[in-house]
Length: 239
Image 1 (cartoon, rainbow, N blue to C red):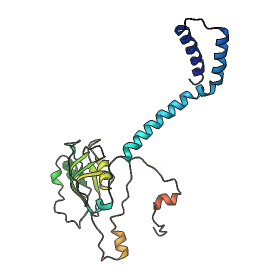
Image 2 (image 1 turned 135 degrees about the vertical axis):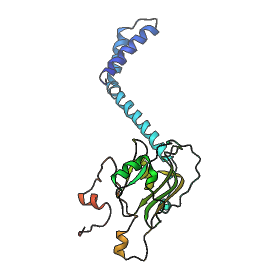
Image 3 (image 1 turned 120 degrees about the vertical axis):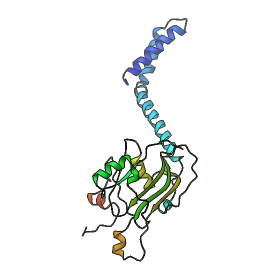
Image 4 (image 1 turned 60 degrees about the horizontal axis):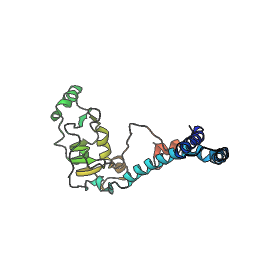
């Protein structure tokens, strides 16, 4: 395509001149035009490349502009559940609620609980027994619509909890909302605090502020294997 642009420019110029002017194209004008186009071969050759990169740059600027102009998620107050905001947006996904299933329940109860979530009750859990608790949560990706609506969930401490649901119902979004990656339109996210009376070893063991999140798409830091494993923490040889 780049090689055809100079030829197409010459033909288009000669055809336009012939139809636009009453006089015929003379030999002197033709050779003078060819000399001019010969000088412009390199700029014309690069024209399509410049246009392609310009379009990509405009699209990238628009995406960055949308990201930079979006509302701030806020500080670390979401970890303590102190980030309530007024909910003024409509609900985007209604009727699709992620369900929490406890692995310590029998398999029959798990499958039954998927259709009847009231069988799996975490209402009597105290805050000391909950690692994470979401109360009346509405979360958005910044579009003004609540991607997750009316979320009330308790994650018990020391147990494996599975979140299951239909494709696109918001399972990954729920995890990212807990990590503070989504905007909180309304509600609170409570994280269980560390008991300050515990020893340092027990506190490290019960440190619920240290969260490991494995995304669906695997990725690595541009660093050594050790740095990818420690992920910014100090290296502990015993572990």
